[in-house]
Length: 100
Image 1 (cartoon, one colour):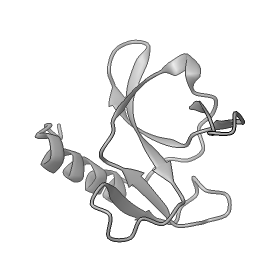
Image 2 (cartoon, rainbow, N blue to C red):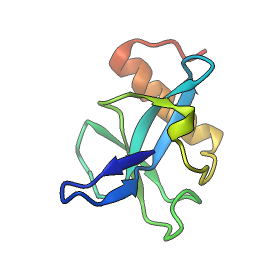
Image 3 (cartoon, rainbow, N blue to C red):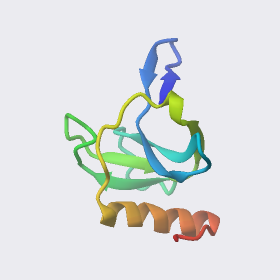
Image 4 (spheres, one colour):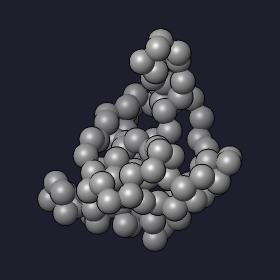
C-alpha cells in the first residue's frame, strides 16, 4: 500500500492481507525487513518470496489497517498456510478475534 517516508519520498508499504472487511476494503498488517528480535509487537516470518532480496521479515501485530483495494498496487507473494496460521494465532491472542 502507498505511504510516505518521513523525508517525503513515496514508497509502497508491504502488507499481509488478513481478510475482507467488505466489498472494497481488506484488513492488513504491515511487514518490515528491519530486525525486531525480542520485540513483542513484531512476529518473525523468516524469509519468503514476498521479498525479492529474501531478507528476513517481521509482521507488526500491534496495528491492524483497513486498506482500500484500489490503494493496493500489486501482489508480491502468498504467505504459506503455516505462517499465516501463526499470524492469525498471534492476532487471536492479542485481540481475541476468531480464527474462522
